[in-house]
Length: 457
Image (cartoon, rainbow, N blue to C red; front, side, top):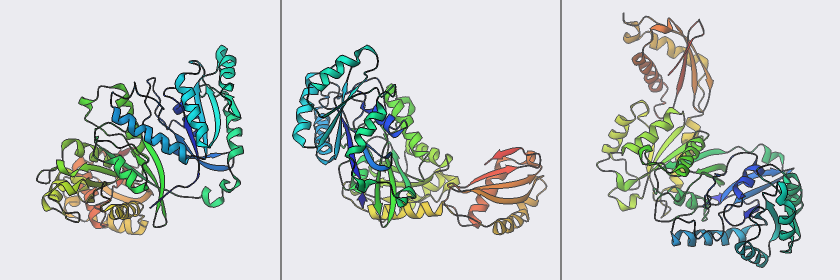
């Protein structure tokens, strides 16, 4: 497995200077979590972006020297500092961000010393320089002696074009956007699950590097992060998301924002892997929170895989298919009873190749297309069944066609649509999936009457 190897630009600075706001401005979207509290960004968030006609990887790094705001966890700060060291060492260009309102601090001066010693090209961006503070903040920043010092305001989009022009000069010609890059397709893969089930460990294992912070306590990842990697000639956009707890246990506003980030991320994914701690399974029973997450993913029309992590700490074998687990999945997710599952150990790199093979297989299954002729032959068959010909059924299926993929979506014209009941909708859907061998695929139907009224299944 191979991760992206593009020109890397890192946003470095102390906490709460506006790095994530600048990151969002440069990627032209709200990708990084912003909140008026120091230390919000913990993981390094990456995004491949285009600056004029060159492709680069932009990195939003955690705040440096954020000791006081790190939830009183010195081990967390140690992990973050090690990651920051790695980011600085592996970056091709660094944008050093400071706060023009607060002015230079002792920590800013320490960061400047560290960056000078790195030997990497530095652009200093003095943020929040709108209004009267601009001139003095810029003068103070120039005193640090960096060749390129710029006054910007990420929030108000001041000086951003000038910053981009300065960055562009440092990007070699080899990163010019090619036609192949323009047409590159990704399989968007999201990892979701409760806190501390191993999502970030799995992300790091697949990327072959410590991109995501990992520690032995829940709630470490606060925002969704996306990375590119390749496997057997296919390119993936891998999305690691914050852990999701039951709503009743979420009181912190920042955690609520993180959960929203998770929901937004997986709804744009092609395949969602729900990570479940295998040590929590007793007699094959899934916990309610895991079933709720699985049901929500399926209701949103996403392809789902259940990955039971940490199997090596249980009685289960990595290639086993326990009958009690299969039974409980089929009865708990009755409308999608053949959801695929796999046992893995992200920490030990066990079964990860098989997991990605399963992702590819699931992705291709959910992009299936069925010809109109085959669909309408099935329609004749189901209309002739005893259930559909019974006296209680006063509607009739007239015509069907496929109108969408991911999930496969079908439009069915129905006479007397108002007479259709939910149990008959389920019968139609189940019969369809059995007939076309799609029990593991999320399928959507839109029922339409001649009067153009619609009903979704």
